[in-house]
Image 1 (cartoon, one colour):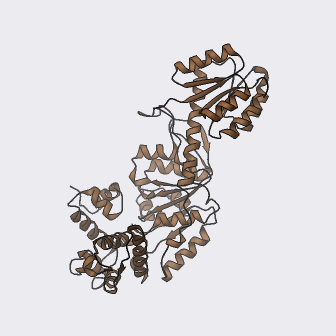
Image 2 (cartoon, one colour):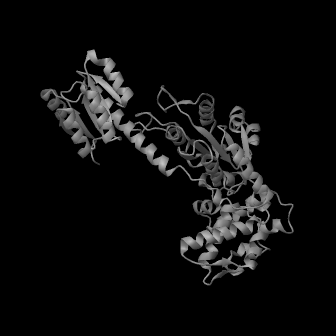
Length: 452
């Protein structure tokens, strides 16, 4: 791995050379400059990660050099060297954009700590910029397809909720599109140009989840060889989406409540308070009120998260939206595959009869598989899964026709069994079919007594 690059700028040749030699010995890639003009030229060519810049320079002074460096290489961090009589000027350099200052003479071990902190700050800023570009979703309204009254009510609620700063709890069955609704809320909010950060709460172990959410200090636990910012810091100014919030442990619930109440938190292994400006959206497919009664979820956190509740209707309750969505998915997949296939009316009829326990996600997978299997220009019933064509063996179809009295839990259990059968008992593959995490599947298997 390439060592961190430094530029030492000082007009004292002896100090400059000794500092460069010592920093090189510590493993840094070090270059030097004796004037502000030379420093600016080197920064433009070398783009060092950190510049150690003396405040007192001949020609262009330290503050003017600082401004020119930041203009030429915005990602470069600058640490100012100053004497005891120039503290006020050093503080002014912080206001301009320097990340730190040290008073000469500075012990080498202290300087190394300041340099490492600057490198980590630079890494955080770069990571944040990448996330701002890559995790800021566009307005996804064109992909929200449906015309049923239930779906129109959902979109109307999103339009009212999005511009606010309120915390929102999004509830709905697996596969209804909770993350997409969260992205649409963010995209229509004043925070739309800032990061949208997704946290899969059920996919992470307890200690790892806290480290991801709140960050950690170097040495906070075994393997923490460097400090790491948390996702709340990455989402600062934007939105954080806590998916499957019902899976979070009581210890993490306590810390989340503190963030909601005070907008502050601490890195794991630190006592320093960090303040952030983050809107929190959360989602779950579980009945959190039941978890509260069971003592598995904090009542005060539930009330804070559910300031506004957005309930997404299951696909089976959306009438002919199934046909509209299937045709929309076919159009989207045709563009991806470079094909021109359409779904026949007979196939659409079978799709409408299915009750879709896996909801929109399941429908998308079915349409994709049908287009791949279809060799002609039209998707026929034979291209659909046997579970949709064989009403006698399909629990979901039985619900939509003769067995309306089946509970949602019974439908879910039947769908889990079908996924396990299709994956020959492989839990990881079954979880992928169901569109849930393996941890979440294991919890459901325990609930239904299907564990070994």
